[in-house]
Image (cartoon, rainbow, N blue to C red; front, top):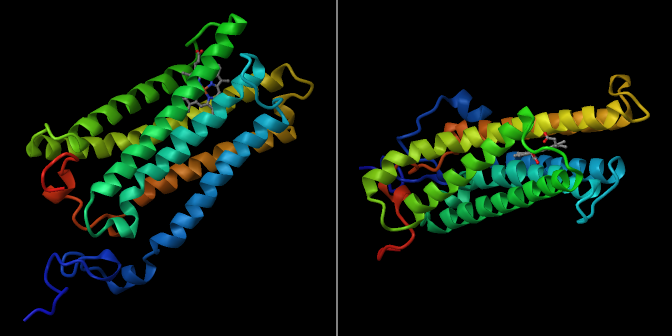
Length: 270
Ligand code: HEM
């Protein structure tokens, strides 16, 4: 007879299901625990926010709300914080070991709240750049960066509304939620990739604008360029690590594909 917890489908220590995730002993040895990884990733996210803030404060004149150049500086800070760091944290909520057992509802609410906070920061970041452009008579939406960025934020807003309606409100039938879930997962990763691409193109564009007419040429690699290029690399590393963590099978919630994972917010059972 099977011992309790050894039955197929039972969640074992660390959240792994006995019988369902049979892995090679070498693979087990190389298995990276989620906790140190998430601490490292949290530190990296903090560094991204610290670097973008330090760049804008030290080299670009700091922050203000007057519609001038210092108002623009809110744009990179809010976009990196919202669309990359907070969004990345929201994407990994279901990978936290405490989220593996028990009801999924609190984690869904946390995921929805973090993505909503990310979206709010992104909208404020866009308000900052549009106000700056309008105050200076600069045309809107002429660059590849602006097209890519706006498309990313629009996709994010559709994703949030569709996710909220399908997974948190009661009217979507179970079959529709099950059908939509892989689409939601696919676009979740896609939006993060597009956000990283938007940030990198924005950093590049800002450096070209600021250093071309400044006292130091970009091609002489002044300290500001080294710093902002490093910021770009940190953002890419953050994005790659989040995507890697999302793809790692052993960090997925064991019942990720069960009908419960499609349970809405407002039902009698929860
Ligand atoms: C996901 C992140 C980002 C998104 C979605 C985004 C989106 C946008 C959008 C839609 C505009 C056009 C505003 C207008 O036409 O009035 C814009 C402008 C701009 N952004 Fe970003 N941005 C992001 C990150 C960044 C970052 C990190 C920087 C770094 C400094 C940056 C630098 C700029 C610059 C210099 C402009 C003005 C020139 C232009 O319109 O291309 N952006 N951004």
